Length: 110
Image 1 (cartoon, one colour):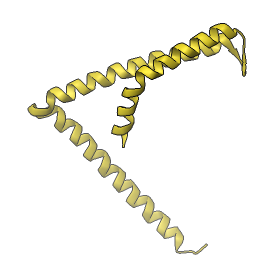
Image 2 (image 1 turned 120 degrees about the vertical axis):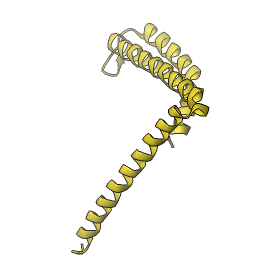
Image 3 (image 1 turned 180 degrees about the vertical axis):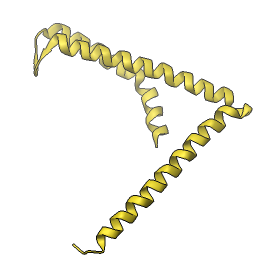
């Protein structure tokens, strides 16, 4: 390892911090702009409500999944196999219903 590499790592850390801060301010500014500009205000509010609804649905699914795991499983073994199969099938059907929303959420992350 070369002694000069230490300075390169410090420079990368500084430029990474500056780039992350700039990206944060740009994203926050864009969100504020979308809510303030009258042309895009309704769409921004609609997307906010859609996101809140999706978040509530995902939290409910997580709570149901956690409860089913605690009641029906011990380690890797099914304590109640019939109930575990039924709840797994129901949650898989729920995943099919959420697939479109998850796809849109993943696309908009990048």
